[in-house]
Length: 328
Image 1: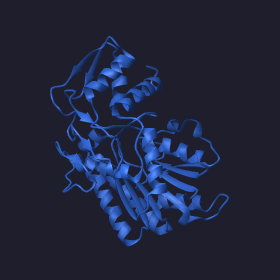
Image 2: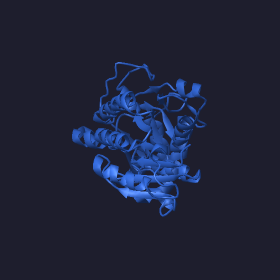
Image 3: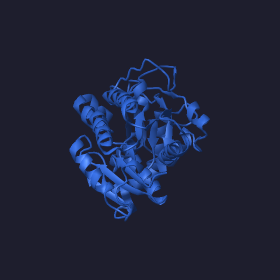
Image 4: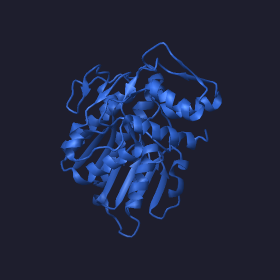
């Protein structure tokens, strides 16, 4: 694997875990982030590492992105090495309800960041892109299992719509100039450093009021969950071992997921066992939420990778980790 890796959204949850793995394997890593959602604190002991660089840049600003990347590629032990640098595009809006309230958030942070990354890659002749997409591109399929070749796709959130538009733009880039692209469709990802998500939200609610836990939705929402360490392991596996110019795959557990009720009970038991849980009246947590979701990971299994943890085990591990993170 080439020894230079650029990660957009580099101060985010998944990026921090990915950067740690890449650094441990001896690579040089450039992190790009505007810090609108990410935090340098997520990098922990990586901050200041000699093979890690950070640049605070809006990834939708193609000129700034290109300049920072070009400067990084022209320095270091190996000199300019554009063809050998790999781009991991993880920058996106992670606050889905905020994107519902203001569609411009997802337009800029989820789609235009992709457009700018592709422009910079074309200008600098970067040859490999790995893209963090989402199960949100499928929309609400009801009882149907989400498979990579499903269609037509009808996202029900602006986030999902902009992720799908990004996938389309990457497909066009592969046809015109990009030698290789991998598209990873994420499930719900849990673990630390947690920056958002249902577990973090519930832990913080119980810290604020240990007696009562209010939950969005009626608790019947069911989705697959994967621990971030296993997500990164799957991404690196596909990047290193799966050939093909344009690879698209779901990443997730090999089960039908767990309910929000199960998550709320796990958080209560860990943080405040005497708390009363109060659920909402609707099966959706918010506008644009897909209440139930089933995910096919047959393609990934056929590639040769499977997770060690199912959804329930991933949730229990993450609840303990996030409670520790929040000193709960």
